[in-house]
Image (cartoon, rainbow, N blue to C red; front, side, top):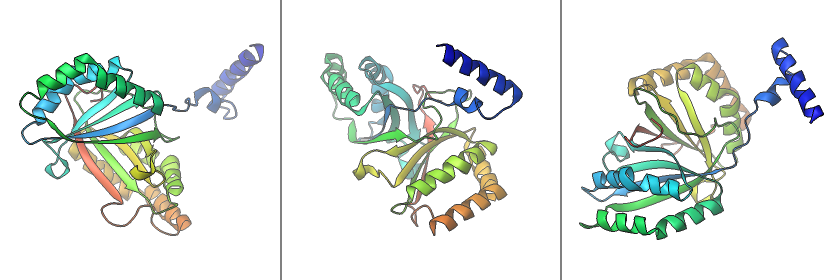
Length: 267
């Protein structure tokens, strides 16, 4: 205990003097050990509002009851990406095993069974469910719900790399991109890798940004792409990798603009 107190005292002195040798240890974030789950629900035609109502009035509370953490709920804003038919949300679990146990308990909960039956009295409301389990990258900000007034515009971005390219992409984000995004008015929310091979493990980066508005997003990215620091970082990283860090074509970089639901903890 005495040794720890001495180290902390030295660290505080170092911080006051601006010495870089001890201060990083005082501010380093604890590694993220949770598992995250990005889920996308596609509603049957004409049933989208019913899906939202079920989540708003029942599902989110039942998730929390069974140990799942609601991080955020969003809907796409563009028709091409599922506006008016898709709900995209992010959960946190203590572990993959905890996720399985939580889903089992949720599915067998008598309250959930009553809610589902009542909501489907006129037919099924969810046509398709997609789930991707995720691990936070070592450079991701802490993954937690956050709100702003007025509500922000969100952007879900997915990058797919050539085989063997994810480490180089991570290095560019870790060393350059996140700071440059922030410089140009974008809020870094969270950065993930899929954990399952059939969902893109080892080749995929999925992340969420927040913008003040859709217009602000366009202005921020224009300024970012014109920034000499970004131009240099991009050129250097591609030179080191021997080519681009994402696969050619629309699958290399995908962007979906999102609006938070009225029941989302992240807004």
